[in-house]
Image (cartoon, helix red, strand yellow):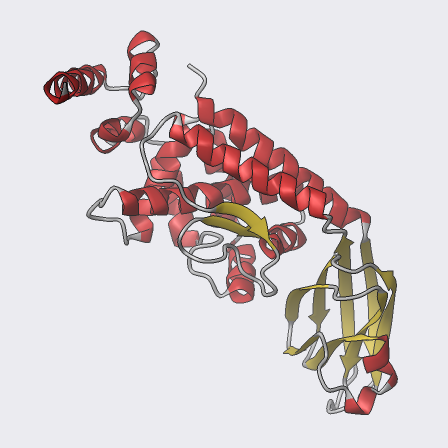
Length: 336
C-alpha cells in the first residue's frame, strides 16, 4: 500500500529542487590572490531586494571577510554596519537577505597578514519571491494535513522563512524551515540528490520530535529516539532508500558532516557520523517499523487502521490493528 504521506514528501522535494536550481543559476566562483598588507573586493552588480545571497570563502590562511553595500564600500574606513563581518582560517560560509536594490561587495582583507593568501569565493544568488515562499509554506501545511490522515495529533505551525543566520529550523513549536539551510546544504554537499536526501531526513526528524513530545513518549527528549522514529516514518512512507543514502553519505564523508556542524552549530541538523551509523543500522533492520507499532497504532486514525486491515503492509501488526479498532468501537458505544 502506498502511504498517503509519500506524495506530500515528493512535493516538498520538488520544491527544494527548484530552490536549489534557482541558486545554481546565480552561481559565480572566483580565485583571488591577496598579498600581505592588502585587500581585494568582488563586486556583485544589481542584486535585487530580498534576494538570498549565499557566500562561501575558502582560504589557505586567516583573512577578514565583509559584505558591504555600495555606500558602505565608498566609506570603507568608516562603515558603521556591514551586512556581514567575520574571519576565516580555512572555510567560511554565510548567507544574507539583500535589503535593497544595489551593488554589493565581498571584501577580502589581508591587511593584518604577513603572507599572501590564495582565496576561492563562491557566490550563489537566488530570488526569494513571495510567491515561491508562499508555495513552500502551503506545501509544508499540506504535509501536516496529510500526516493527520495517518496519525492523531495537535496541529502545529508549518512554513518556510529566511532566518538571517545559518540554522535549519526556526523555533521549537512547529516545522518552520530556514531557507539558509537549503542553500548551505546544496553549497557544501554539491549535489542536489544528496541535499534533498539530507533535507528530507531533517524534516522527518523534526516531525518525529514534535509527535513524540505531543504523545508524551518517555523518550521524547532524546535525539536518538527522534532519529529512530524518523527512520521508522520514512520506512512507512516508502522512503527507506533515502534514509539509507543519507546515512551512508555522512558515514563515508565525515568532513562534510563536520563542515555543516561548524557552520550551523546545531547538533541535530544535519546528522553526525555516529548518528548516521545508527540510522543506517535501523534502516536495514527489517523488523524496525514493526517494533514501533505498539507506539504508533494507538495514535493512528481509524480510517488509516481500516486501510491497514484491508491492505496490510510488511510492517503492519494486524493483531494490534484489530485490537485497537475493537477498543475504539467499544469506547464509541460507551460514549453513546
